[in-house]
Amino acid sequence: MSVRLFAPYLGEDELNEIRDSFEKSWVGLGEKVFKFENAFSEYLKCKNSIGVNSATAGLHLALNAFRFEKGKKVLVPDITFASTAFAPIYNGLEPVFVDVCEDTVTMSVEDLQKKYNKDCVAVMPVHYGGQPAVMEKITDFAKDHNLKIVEDCAHTIGASYKGKKLGLWGDVGCFSFEEKKAMTTGDGGMICTNDTEIAERIKSPRWLGIDKDTYKRSSGYTSVEELDVKHWYYDINELGFKYNMNDLSASIGLIQLKKLNWMNNRRSEIIRKYLDSMKDLKYIRPILPFEPEKYSYWLFGVRCGKRDELIKSLKSKKIATGVHYVPLTQVNYFKKWKSDCPVAEKIWNDFVTLPLHVMLSDNEIEFVVESLYEYEKNNY
Ligand SMILES: Cc1ncc(COP(=O)(O)O)c(C=O)c1O
Image (tube, rainbow, N blue to C red; front, side, top):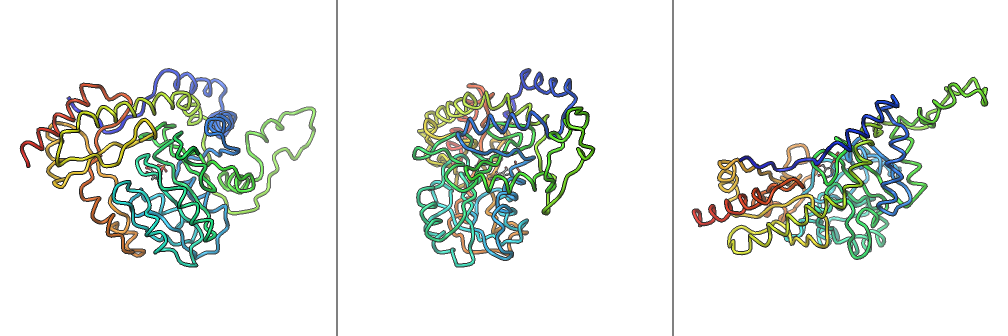
């Protein structure tokens, strides 16, 4: 038996929706993207959702919307995926790496206060693995220091924290539908905001800065009511990017969104099983203070002092593992922006990500847990 780390949950319904787009012979930015955006807004209970081809593109466009002066600084956690820190750099801004909390692996508010200076214009909290960042404190700090908040919600979709949906605490929230995530569109992302002015500043640059969508213009190409020979005309008012979602991705997204609550619950059930059966381990501990009945996690993992030996032992049993993430201050490209993040530097050495996806069977979970017990018995 080999146990997969992540796996998307896709089936006939997604295929049928894609077939429908084939039959309509429209697979680019079109009706399905708008439908998916509306469905997502309804799901999250927000005013605006904008579909893009990745969360990476979403984070870029979100910061772009604020028109920050070049050279200003954006606060990002040290433990996250590279996309969070690339977003300021794409915008001519500088990332400032903030240390994380030892237990939750989310941005430390104490270090945020220390790293802040008057050049900072925004903060990008990440809900690591689905663990909510301390949003009430981060929003208070941001308000007091005039910082915009772009929430990186790549690891969680649909969960609430202190009564408010994650993604709606900040000015803008960005979600990921990359193949491994809580739901997928192959690749894709959604930018959500209740600020309609900001939403307007995101829509146009996601489609090359063109002021009219091809899909909407195309209805005028053959319209006999509207004998305007300039139906093809559009203007460009700003630098744009080719970041739009397409109808094939949106077809998958429309179906995945209907399954999302079920998939979130299934992942929670699996985490509960892991936690209950791991209680007697002494040297291997859950990576996060998981509360699977409360939040929606995308990642499950453990901390173990002899991390590499554990990975080797699990690998010998064909159990896939990962490490999320090497702190960005230790990644070659980001060394230029290195700052002191002693907690991140210490804790990541113990991280091991374990299999978590909705198709993981009880047998597989038991096999993973038994392997952890066996490892502990033989190595401590
Ligand atoms: C924290 C975080 N932010 C952003 C991204 C980027 O998402 P995408 O792959 O949709 O661009 C990821 C992807 O893994 C991520 O983990």
